[in-house]
Amino acid sequence: MSATHEVFNQVEPLVDVNLFDNNRALQSALKFNAPGLGTSGFSALGAQVGGADMQQHARLANVFTPQLKSHSRFGHRIDQVEFHPSYHALMTAATAAGLHGTPFAADEQASGHAHVKRGASFMLFTELEPSMLCPISMTYAVTPALRDNPAIYRDWAPGLTSRAYDPALKPFTEKAGLTMGMGMTEKQGGSDVRANTTQAVPDGSDAWGQRFSVTGHKWFFSAPMCDAFLILAQTPAGLSCLFLPRVLPDGSLNKLYIQRLKDKLGNKANASSEVEFAGATAWLVGEEGRGVPQILAMGTMTRLDCALGTSGLMRQALSIALNHTTQRSAFGKKLIDQPLMKNVLADLALESEAATALSLRLARSFDRTQDAHEQAMQRLLTPVAKFWICKRGSHFAQEAMECLGGNGYVEEGGEGIMARIYREMPVNSIWEGAGNIMALDLLRALRKADAAAALAHELAPARGMHPALDHLAQSLPIRVEQMANEMEARRLAQDVALAVQAALLGQTAPPAVFGAFCESRLAGHWGHSFGSLGAGTDVDAIIARAQPR
Ligand SMILES: Cc1cc2nc3c(=O)[nH]c(=O)nc-3n(C[C@H](O)[C@H](O)[C@H](O)COP(=O)(O)OP(=O)(O)OC[C@H]3O[C@@H](n4cnc5c(N)ncnc54)[C@H](O)[C@@H]3O)c2cc1C
Image (cartoon, rainbow, N blue to C red; front, side, top):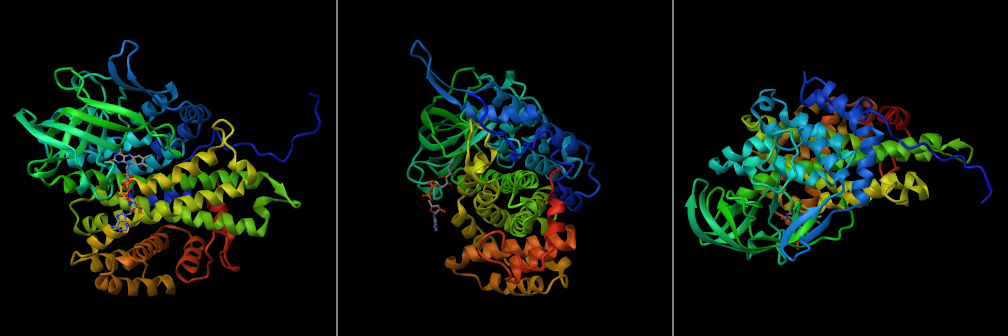
């Protein structure tokens, strides 16, 4: 074909940028939550994950998705999942960056900021590829629950905290690094796991404690190539938490059979499966019959990651929208200079910075587990952040996608990163406790006598900074104390999130950001869509702070 036209007014993609050095919101949140923590490591990671070669791995891992190999060509069951080499490259990078169990290693704990440090790195990595972070996140989250079987934890901790990625299907003693997953959801129920029917029959005991033979299924079982899983099953004493390795200590394969892989909306690079256990061997973790609180020690940390991950995706979507509108023109101006587009971009920037601030503040509570206020904040803000940030994610991604016009909606063989972000967003809201479950969990947290006082204490540093925040802060403890009605739980979770986000921005963000956030989200000068900030808002200052270059 001969050329029919010149291609112009299309944008250069956002690659080979340092994702940390220009992320001022993340830098401010880090300074606030981990003062004194050096930033050179983040800068190195920001350069790595923003680089073209890593972006290419992310694309390939999403295009060439995991394949189940249930049987060998000779008919033997092998239950393996095959991944593209780019998936393994991403896993290697995430493990080397210490995003899995590393914060629980003694040398990391000594810094006092292990979880904030890891949380910020996790956010940055999410901007590269979020779905393969599922097994990384579960391996991070498992330690608080697994520690309650000290014998297993002693044997597995070195592999869970090591910075080596080792995908081989081998006994744990022969591996340089280990990963873990979780199995709770069954066909008949995921939120209400009390309905689990999987049976665990006592089968003696050994150095790892009480052993069980497990028969049943899990309807959602992500990252089935992990080395072991915490699962829920019914023992004679009731629903219990069990440790189920894929390869048994004697080197034989455990009786865990992968039925098929889920065909998902997004989250494409990650394998999620349906499995059956046919007399699989597992060991008790924690108290028999107390499986739900036991495995929730893991769930609490994966919920933190849902908030961190969504914040990372928001930042990525915002950066791409800013990159696009800075280069693309319409009606005689760059899009970013059109007043209404400024309103949209600034509004997205406020949401992104507020999500970052709340996520890292929650991560801080995991670094200070001996502090009573931090314990209260961990309990209170985990469901709040998981609910609100993840709930905002899909709406955010849609609006950021729209900034790119039609190009935003196009996949183009995985080049359409915005489409990938949009498809990824809802999962963080659904798994690990969907929106309603999080709001109801907040009600449970609030029943603690000191919840209202803890919330008031958290908001106190921002007192007097903005009348709308003062008004909300005054009303919340009363609403918290009177709260008995499930019907209002989402509204309460939203308002607690907004109040804490505003108070954090008051302490970490420039006045233009803090003022616009309070005016829009708290004072009512806002509509139901992004891009409805009030006329007097300093949108230029907000956009300049958010620019990714
Ligand atoms: C990609 C993907 C991967 C997953 N990986 C795993 C995994 O590795 N391991 C695992 O165990 N699970 C996994 N899950 C399952 C996930 O955690 C569940 O889907 C989720 O917890 C919801 O459970 P459910 O699907 O049974 O829905 P249900 O429990 O039926 O809930 C449906 C809806 O009802 C709402 N609801 C429930 N109870 C109430 C109530 N009392 N009041 C008001 N509303 C209520 C929920 O909020 C939800 O919106 C995965 C899910 C997905 C999508």
